[in-house]
Amino acid sequence: MARLALLSTSDKTGLVELARVLVEEFEFDLLSSGGTAQVLKQAGIPVTKVSDYTGSPEILGGRVKTLHPRIHGGILARRDLPQDLADLEANQIRPIDLVVVNLYPFEQTIAKPEVTLPEAIEEIDIGGPAMLRASAKNFAHLAVLCNPSQYDSYLQELRQQGGETSLEFRQACAQQAFWHTANYDQAIAQFLSSQTTESKSDGEQKTLPQRFTLSGQQVQTLRYGENPHQPAAWYQTGTVPSGWAAAQKLQGKELSYNNLVDLEAARRIISEFSETAAAAILKHTNPCGVAVGNSLSEAYEKALNADPTSAFGGIVALSRSIDAATATALTQTFLECIVAPGCDPEAEEILTKKSKLRVLILPDLNRGASETVKAIAGGFLVQSSDDYLTDPTTWRVVTERQPTTEQLEELMFAWKVAKHVKSNAIVVTSDRTTRGVGAGQMNRVGSVEIALEQAGDRTQGATLASDGFFPFDDSVRLAASAGIEAIAQPGGSLRDQDSIQAANELGLVMIFTGVRHFLH
Image 1: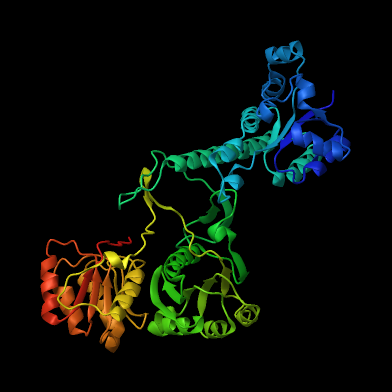
Image 2 (image 1 turned 30 degrees about the vertical axis):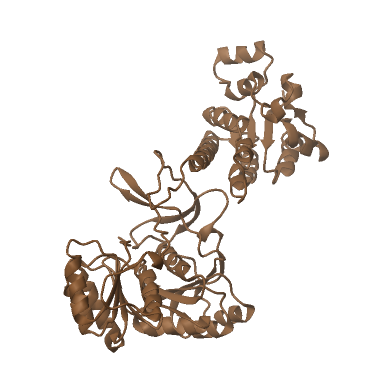
């Protein structure tokens, strides 16, 4: 008796070609349901509809098609057990040797901005996962394919194995099937959770789900992780590429682990300035130069001049499409990566002079993960991303001296940058340009000293932002002695009054934002 293959696919890529080879070269009989059978018939390939084979019509608008003993009996039968074979014979069930199934496009459906809950529900596949799991469970006796990318390797296996498949091959396919259904179920669970877990208003914290799962498909193996002795790989979440997985690499070497970590930090900081021409230069996830300007090239030159030494070998993020003037400036310094929402043809031609320079186009620089995840021994931590929108109308001026409009705008710029600097974070700015950045120190005074030293004489009349409150007045006095005139900090220390008193004594402006932005 000819071998039997069951084909039931949502994604029809490569289906007709596979079916034709199965029938003409390997003499399979084919079973198919619904639209799959129609496609095969139109291609002139002989196929039996599942409903004709089972004697049960498709019902409930197609919700029930393959859920039948003649289908699942043929999939699950153990060919080495006499009782299973007897059951097949008694019930006129043919054993199935190959199952080719991929699932309804649930993730593609929920990716649509205006998708409704009923629309999403109808894209939850039932029969498909049941067949995949049954086939994968019984890999000792049949093969299961859940992705068109597997078709060629399956046919090659048949040719190399004299029309058969090895146990090793079938087990590998089973593993892929279980990963496929696991990811599918995860996407459904997360979507349904998002329908019931809503952000609270009035400043209340967002509710996180009781269960949190993370899965991904490998995009590529990376040369190594943070260091050469650490293996690493890059994974994308979901079946629809987004974020960096959807970015276009115009040129340059392959991205490394550290490149991707730095690029994400660059994306986060430049997203704060999407309404203007802005540039950010980063090293080791910390900004060494950030600026806004009347043009993109002006913004980049200002950011570069903020700390040209640290910019060497840095990552650059730009808020506008790269133009020719900016591209020319970018080629004057050794850089690792550039990311922007676009690139003009003239600029692209200029950048090719630096063939090893990685240039990425990510049109939506503002969209990032809604949660951040950190692994710890025995588990992981999840928090909502720090996407709190700065609202200066909620700021409180706590000093006798009131800020000018210009000072408030400068404080806003400094505060946005400080949000993306490793704690303890201190940022000194003037003319919407970073002048000094103190990052990651064990005490806040140390960060102030680093930022002021880096800024040099550019501290005169400048502003200073701190991601956390000042527990003592020493930082305020140190800033004033260097010429700082305005300070932004969260407030909230038991000794806030000491800092306020020092600011008043020294004639500084100081505002409390009421929000801190620790970044560990």
